[in-house]
Each structure stands twice: as structure tokens, then as C-alpha cells.
Length: 280
Image 1 (spheres, rainbow, N blue to C red):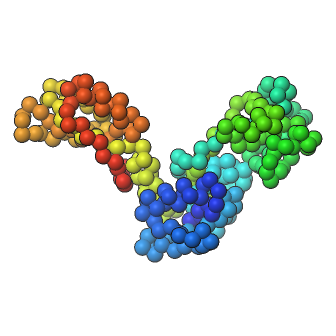
Image 2: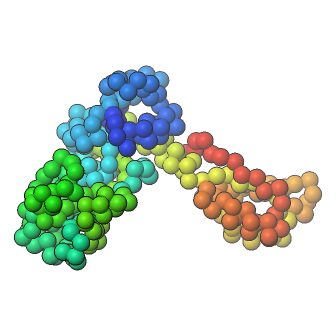
């Protein structure tokens, strides 16, 4: 039975459970449940703190888990990213008092407050910057004002909290993070292959739609250029031999633009359908 770690709370939790449900797995109905078995799919889910998931997977206690890329790197364990999952995106950046810093090199010899000390130490070591890392569990924005640090490294979304604290972002992003499926480093786990394929199917289903339309035969090549699909569009004859019916997967975010261009080309009966599940 595959043992899977799932975030029990926070921004990762609901989205991770929703994605697993879309992939056909049972999910808990009570947030107090810590373990849930899905016998139909031969899988067992363990609901854990997102920060702890990489540790359990890295030690081999659990087979795979869903956590943030930032939390995986910060844990410094024998676990690796298997599949990016496309939700809970965030950016990890440096920030300091307005006007004090313009580049990362200016952090040499400074004190840096963060909740991600493992991730930050690795980043600084790669660039040969020697600075003192001060680990805090949260609210690192206050550390400079309270004299604990000279600058901070933290997850940034809108930047409004930093502005309110009299700080500004500087330097390139340390890391662009998102939710990821992780496994033990260097291990091949055949039992996880079905889970990975199902999650990949959910990702594709969220990003694409099916588009059907009718087009005159002589315009087929131009239409296919607009809707190439993943390999090639499906083309079927119609009763009127001068026309064909076309079906193709197209990126969801480009749906209306493609429909407009197809209509201008001469396509008619253009229909769009959602994809609920797929295997690519």
C-alpha cells in the first residue's frame, strides 16, 4: 500500500486534497482525521504539518508527499522533487530597510532573519556570501525594527506587509516555489507511478479544453496550425464532402482567441468542452 503525506493545514492543504480528489482518490471529510485509507486504490494518506512532510519522506517513513518546493529545500533531507503541481506559487526574496541595500553582495557580514534557514544557508554558500542567519518561526518583518537582524529573507506575495514595515525587496529572487510531489532521493517506487500519472492527468485537464469545429477541406491545414493538439488533431469526414469535422486539445487560457481566429478563417459550429480526466 502506497503511503502518502498530505498537508494537514495551511495554503497547501485544501488545494492538495482537491487535486487528489480530482485524481480519483478518497479524501477526509473531517479535518481532525490524521490517517485515511483508500482501499480501492491501495493507498494510505497521512495528514501532517507541511514543514514535516519532507522529513518523513526523506527518512523513508512515507513513500511520497505533497509539500512546497521551499519547504523541501529548507529541510535538507534525502528527498527530491518528482512532479510540480501548479498551485500555491510563491517567491522567496530578500528585503531590507528602504535604501539600505541594492544587491545581494551587500549582505556580506550582515545578520539575516528567516524562517527558512536551511534554504538560505545553501543559497548564501553557493554565492560565497558570509552572513549570520537568524532563524525565527514567523513575523520576520519585525526583526529589523527590533534590532535582531539587518535584513530578512522570506516568502513574498504582494509585498504589502513589507511596505508597512518600512522595507523593500532587493536582489534577484532566491527561489520561485510551488507545491510539488516529492519522493526519497534516488529511489524508484513503482507504486507511485499510478499516482504520478493521475496527477499529471489532472494538470493537463486543468490546462486544456477540447475544441470541436467544422471547416472546409481546403482550409484544414490553416486550421490545424491554430489547433495542433498534443500530437495531431482528429479529422473526420462530414456528409458534405467539402467539409470536415475537427477535434483538438487547446490551451484553456487561449480558448477565446483561437475561437475568434477559427471563425475568421471560416470554421463554424465551434464548440468547447471541459476535460475532467485524461492520460497523456
